[in-house]
Image 1 (cartoon, helix red, strand yellow):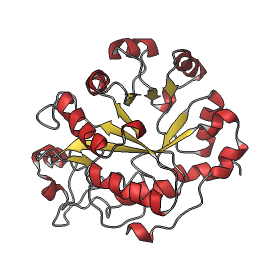
Image 2 (cartoon, one colour):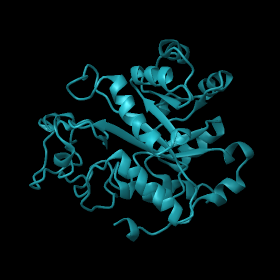
Image 3 (cartoon, one colour):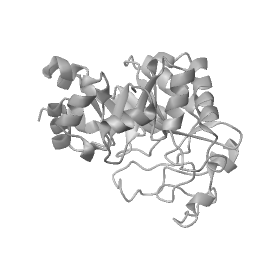
Image 4 (cartoon, one colour):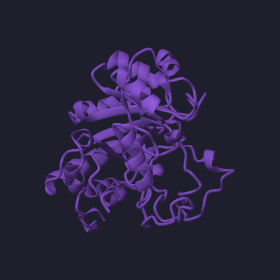
Length: 295
């Protein structure tokens, strides 16, 4: 499947025409290219590379046998998942399909690429599985080498459920160590960002792996300074829900030496708006929109 993906011209012309500030603009493909490809699949990551993303944003969970798996949730979401027998999963039952209670060989049997996604009806459809973080990295590194593309940054989110330790996820220290064991084995620490809404994972990472970049994800309207105080250190990136971002917040982040990258920015109009505010990048479901900026 990977080799069948067509290489799409990157958006280098956009960056050439932009200002020096915009030349450093970070395009992060949400879960690969979720708007046009099944999320958190190897195929989606490779498509995002074809579209010129600088950072591959992906979501990580842990299986029963301690394998790090790409998944937006620590269970099989009813919106995208089919059981190994082809039957759908209901909203009521989805959390019963708990990845943390399954060995990876069982996880791999579910299809997360064939079902039409109600929020992303334009997605390409094909049978796909939830890949391991390690095999995703291997596939990406081989692909960029083969196609002479710039090596991407990996932004890996620790997906946790509040009060879900030992039920849907390991404790923060074990979660982070499992990810970092893979990152260090692949010698990618300089090209990795660990992002999370769960401050505990970032706090542990900052303590044990202080050189690794961090991104604090935010979805509630509380003062920026309060979040930084709760976190206890300055993250590399502050990543709020896009509706929370205004010029004042951008300036406060930059005054503290923190980058700001909002999520999820899915239209050309929004991209231009946030560029004009001076953000350092965006997370988008549709990295293909970047090629439309100069039209």
